[in-house]
Amino acid sequence: MSTLRNTNHKSWNEIKINDSWALFKIMSEFVHGYERMSEIGPCVSIFGSARTNPEHKYYKLATEVAEKIVEHGYGVITGGGPGIMEAGNKGAHLAGGTSVGLNIDLPFEQHDNPYIDKDKSLDFDYFFVRKVMFVKYSQGFVVMPGGFGTLDELFEAITLIQTHKIDKFPIILVGHEFWDGLLAWVKTTLLDNFKNISAGDIDLVQVVDSADEVIDILNKFYNQYNLSPNF
Image (cartoon, rainbow, N blue to C red; front, side, top):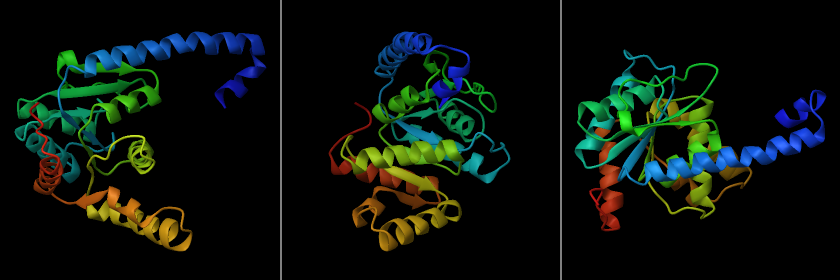
């Protein structure tokens, strides 16, 4: 749509040239991301709203979740911004673990939080490149209450696993009060009424309310495959 809107100001030739040159920028983001992320070791990504303030119960819970994730041998990856992202990085920092921030330039809400390791703060211009980094370098997704961006990242991961484009990994939704309504709609509308998904697709996510439950799911999953986060 942005290309179509620009047609009033640019010729089609100019648009095609700009699109071609953009490939080099996209490629550079992938190369830089792969090089940096391949060095960080096993991590779990924490997602959630940038608007959650530090006094909110889910900010405090995200901090606790991140601390326990680090205590069990993983690092933490977030989107690098405020709110739940800050809480995730804060918990990792307090526990002395790896704290990664995948930042993106946005017209509102996004700014680096102070709890990211200085050598593990990456900046992206493209959402799709950033999302590849989350999926490629995470051993699990912990999804706190959030908005459209959080839902986008959640459903992309579910879709990739559903379609066997990536191997299955734990996707853990935190907060029954937030997620149960959405999952009820998925089951009733997508599965029961319209048959647009399979029954097994529901099992790709689990809902919990505590940090201990998050760790239990991660440990059970990787014990099943005889894998350790400390490789």
